[in-house]
Image (cartoon, rainbow, N blue to C red; front, side, top):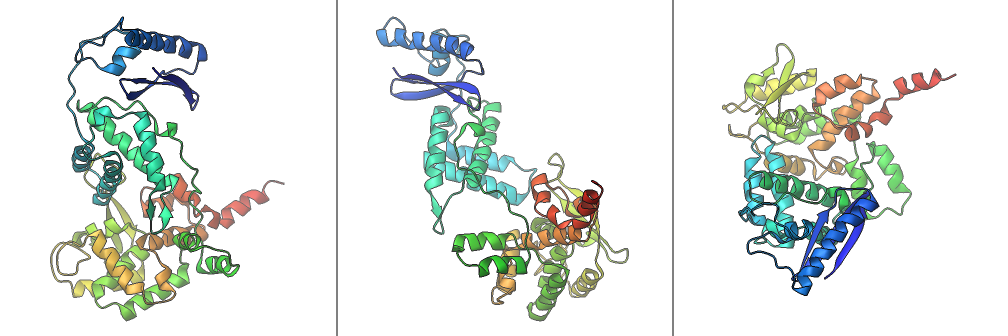
Length: 402
């Protein structure tokens, strides 16, 4: 019977085969000496099983029995089987405290897992070898002619690990015995810094840029103050309804997320005081909603006041017909509004407007703490994408070196 040892991120793991099935187990040690002792027990057990001097009792877990040296440490507990299809449905439905868009992403990730490994596959039968097989097959999958990136695959593996652990806590599976870092994935290029229209045009003018690289460049676009004003001029002149103008201006002049714009209610706006409360979901998942208050720019105040005067009724601040606007509808209306303009069609979505707010404030030397308060929860990786636009404070610090 096959039995092999490998080192993953400094930790020793053992893999073995029994009755045509492969098993993996973390030895939970970085010591070769300790690993050799534990593997010796496993190899001895496998030898006795192969020679017929030892049998696995009915109902015993194969991996646990072999790792324990042919002993049943405790009476085997029956574990309810949960399929990957059921895991996808139940875990995504259980994540009620997160953004609806986040739940949608969770479902998409687990749907990829179910498609590749089999929707009816029991989670109980899966291990590190299966997860590695998933990663290898997923990286080969293409969308719009482009293979799946290591970055995307890694995010999907993180979702699978969280869902798997959730199932184990409820007695629906054994805890996962693998780490995301144990899976070999190609390195990602990382998130590039935000760039202006002119900077991107200069790169493209040099030539040699593939369509995929050009798409990636436009994903880094941010508009400066003048361009945000010109974009709003275009929207006011071409939008078929004032609610669409308010929708775009809301994000472009506050940096709120698309989902935060959609869930905004009329009572959140105090135009007389010049403030708006943003309803958050990401900052504290233990609470249904939290708030951050943002100052309303004079132009946004004027646009929203005009829209509220024609508001169709209902509680939602941005609404086509009084009902709640969802993120897909918002994205569709923005895309249709900008797609025929050679310049504004380069804007890939609401996230470009949000990034523009962060970049403009950074370029004007606004304190990072205020930028965080305006934009809400942010990761350090996102901050690094626009911190190169903070020249004044950095240059002052460098000048003090000598």
